[in-house]
Amino acid sequence: MNFFKRLFKIGEAEANSAIDKMEDPIKMTEQGIRDMKTDLTKSTEALAQVKALAIRSKNTTEEFVTKAEDYEQKAMLILKKAQNGTMESIEADRLAKEALIKKEEAVQQANRGKEETDKFDKSVSQLEKNIQEIKQNISRWENELKTLKARVKVSAATKNVNKQMAAIDGSSTVSMLERMKDKVSQDEAVAEAYGDIANASKSIDDELDKAANVTESNAEDDLAQLKKKLGIEKS
Image (cartoon, rainbow, N blue to C red; front, top):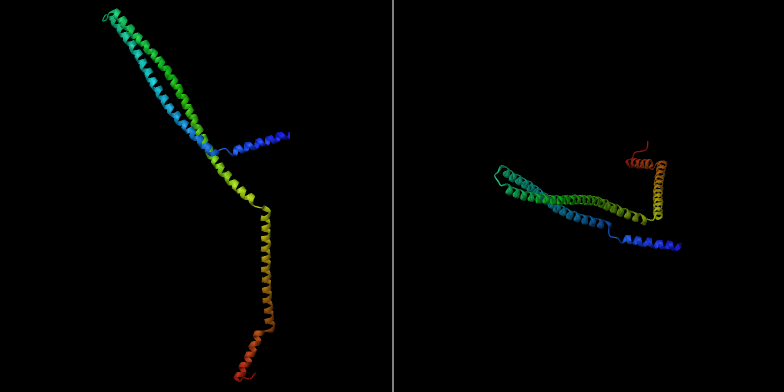
């Protein structure tokens, strides 16, 4: 049982390797579209040629139909001449017979021409059907190619993003962020401590100056010295 599993795995690996070695699907699709456009050109040329044959066959058939009618009219005129005495009956019969033979030949030619025309019309119909199918396939493949190109772009972009995401160590990133938070918190605490120290020092100086009244004391001393200098006695 394990042997068959290993054999299946080997086959699966070879199949995946073969798929990886396949040609670029976009290039294959583009080549397929080019091939179909070549077929379309050939089919269009063949359609034009068969249509030309069909038109020519139809015109030839109509010509033979007209000839058959003309020979019949000639035979009738000849018989009328024999009837009214302007032509001998034996000669009229001979010529009328020849005209009818020509008419029959023309009818046969017209029938053969009609058969050929019908065949050409069938070929035209089949070629037109093939051309329409090729056009539809080209349109469908071109739309699929657009979709395929878009999917390839999205797949490539997604692959790159996933590779970048896979290269990022989530745990190390979280640790780095935590260390950064700790450092910021520490810096903020130190800044706050320095602020408290500065405020504390300022408050003590204010209290000392107020208690000692240094400014007022200095002013009293200066005033006494100035009065002494001017000879002004204290009142």
